[in-house]
Length: 168
Image 1 (cartoon, rainbow, N blue to C red):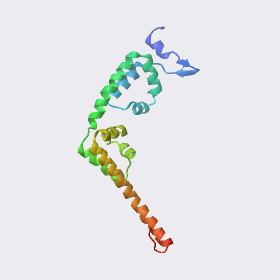
Image 2: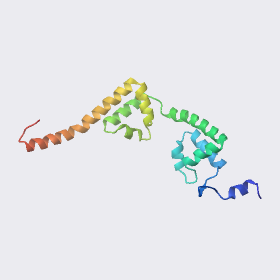
Image 3: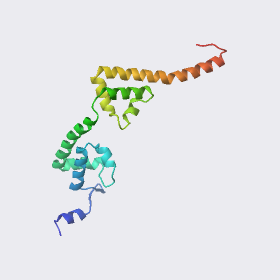
Image 4: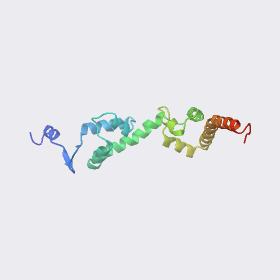
């Protein structure tokens, strides 16, 4: 029946420059808004299921559907609070970050771990908290010194063998 929701859903995709374009789907849009509100990172959520649109399609939907854009914007605001509540600053977290860096992990490797905050959060904390910034700098120096010690010893062992016991 023309004009009914069923006939619209079965209609061929709109084309743009000869390529099919995904139409706005209220059900998927509601699912995206709900997941983002719960704190799911949108990029990761969209990549988790093949039936969900990509970021480009979501951006187009936001431009075409002002109501969806407003809902998603509000969901993103709520999401910041939901995600932030899980990773509030603590002295224990600072110690864990510094210990992992001393063990040899870079900041990028530390932030890639699921129980750690993201790189932007660490940078923001290091700008706002002088003690944390100093602890990160100290951990980076310790990591370099710890990593350099075996290399230095092996270099000196090779130098000693080559130059008859001379140490420079």
